[in-house]
Image 1 (cartoon, one colour):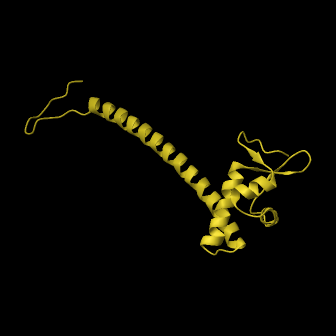
Image 2: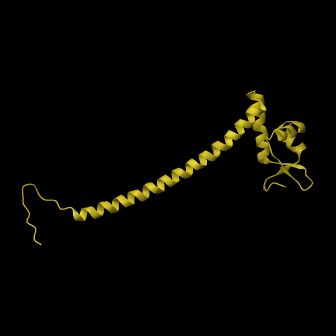
Image 3: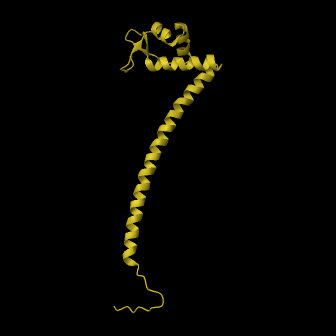
Length: 131
């Protein structure tokens, strides 16, 4: 199944060159489920620009920080979770703002109603009510 990506799709040799690694490394990363390239009708691996960036991130974590592949997998999964949580938080913030605006409108309406019912009596004067 080919990824529905409007950007470039690269065969494994080109993807490996763009990411600066050996094609066998990409196969290992796929076995470890660190990357999941699309497939052509003939089952050829096809890597997107997003896949290339992911490969570069894996390389940075392993080479620069000395993190093993199990740690890299966990970090990448946590990054996905973090993006989802940030998105949900933004949605909740928008919802909160909308609810706050609605509450402020309702409070104004309630205050308007009470202003009509409240009668201020000057101190020391008695008011006689006629019914």
